Length: 234
Image (cartoon, rainbow, N blue to C red):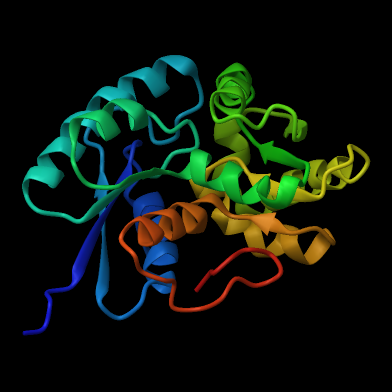
């Protein structure tokens, strides 16, 4: 008897449905034919998580929604915001694999002992990101955390501006001793190809990393091998 398709629920901790669709598409493109990625957008909160307060509020929703989805029979969960809001609590409260895109992205960036830099657009989350680096055990391998200038909402609202801003700080990371770059945010996937084309370092896109983590936990493999940039964008 053929097994029903595996179902992986991708939880977008913000309220932006376009971002959910973007990240779900990236994850689905990596999946073998017997895996379906289902995107879920939180109902309350900001369209972009840019500060600690929003991150904490998102965590509560992620845990509630994640528990409900686990009870409904999904096979794995992905917390698809770079702050991994609610990840550890959710992991403690369900009996299925739960991936966080920051945790998975950092693990890929730091593999084989390489030093890596994180590039992002949210200055008010600097402390939170550094806390996650320490929590996941990568502080000795972090070459730098570079954050673009300007208001995060304004930078993210203009795709061309976002790409230019990320490329600029990615180039700075080359002088920091970085051997790989990690994009510090799910919505930043829109700039992944542009950054990879501009910078001669491996670029880790965290949504793809989170999906690979979830597949591995289920004993499955991605549908296509990793490329130089560690990206699998459709």
